[in-house]
Amino acid sequence: MKPIQMVDLTAQIEDIKPQILEKISEILSSSHYIKGNYVSEFQDQLSQYIQSKYVLGCANGTDALQVALMALNLKPGDKVLVPSWTYVASAEVIALLQLKPVFIDVCMKSFNLDVSQLDLISEIHRDIKAAIPVHLYGQSADMEPILAWAKEHHVAIIEDNAQAIGAKYRFSNGSEKFCGTIGDLGTTSFFPSKNLGTYGDGGAIFCNKADLFQQISGICDHGQLSQKYIHDIVGVNSRLDAIHAGILTIKLTHLDEYIASRRNLASFYTNALNDIDAILTPQTMDYSSHVYHQYTLKILDGRRDEFQKFLLSHQIPSMIYYPKPLHQQPAYHTEYDDRISLANSEQLSQEVISLPMHTHMSDDQRNFIIEKIRKFFV
Image 1 (tube, one colour):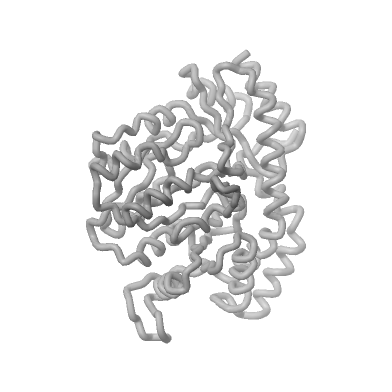
Image 2: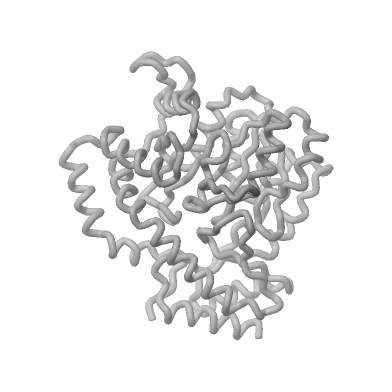
């Protein structure tokens, strides 16, 4: 049996290597490495896939979040709502722009923003200007109540869709939208381990309004809104390079296949582990599909760290996303307001563990993982 990888990118590229190499060779021969047709082609194809009117590639997912915030013309000290249970980039960009993060807890079932806290937070913080709901681990935050709250309180919504590209949110009227296309702006990451990843760094911003698209386009290009060398606003240099765009154009045609493979593995894990009392398998919410960027268990008997060591002793990799919530991180703990309970985020940091999840897991590998997990708990 091959060694088990948390994410097996080597196996994945073998299936598409001839197409990838041909595309890279074509781009090298063109000498068009920045902007140009290859980037436009990918942006257009992703726009059609995700059903967003505009898509702009940028250098990485963190830049995508930062540029989206910059496009809102917020002022230093303005408050931005963000879950405490997420990757640091979601709060990092708030602090970098001299804005103030307001942390909200997450739901124990979905791992996403707890909408039941929104009214309390509005009572405490009446001047929140923006919110960043994160679609964590591969499924959507509960966007319908978030949108209603945002409309009532005049809050702009930026979706952090770095982990859930291809997932859909289902509204109460039965309509669906892709995650990342529901709020004012959406962002994603093309980090190599993502469901749609390149072989390096990359990101994108989604929106449906022409004025916002013009703003983010100018910000990403040194603040040039009207013409070259005329810098209308303060901007940054954040571009998706042509080679990465070419790679992503090919991988996008396989995204549904990759998602189906992840769902198949997730179903296998869940069916094999559901009867173990000490394990709570991931729950798919009624309002969302799940694309399983991560397959994240909750270990309920206090033995999570012991369990991780056991897996490692059998050469089974695992990850804890995340070992410490943001409000307890040294860089952000002073922003914590104890009138807002973040108990779920704190509890999850002690319970969660993610199993290997990728598109090329062999039957031998997944059977071995389940055999060892059941040996530990049963």
